[in-house]
Image (tube, rainbow, N blue to C red; front, side, top):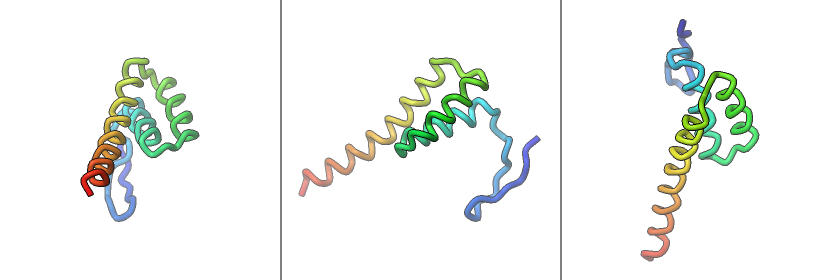
Length: 81
């Protein structure tokens, strides 16, 4: 059952996502911000929740795509000057 929570004035229901999906999101977010310890922790938790290697890899690629888009945008802006 989802529990009502608030984070930085954003109200949400924790538990709306299934545990495996939540851990895959945590894992991808940690990858995207370069938080190695968090990525390792949530990768382990995702595996314990039954995440397949394909699901883990897909999550990792989504994180990499977001980071790559930011790098590309910054590079284009710097080169265009």
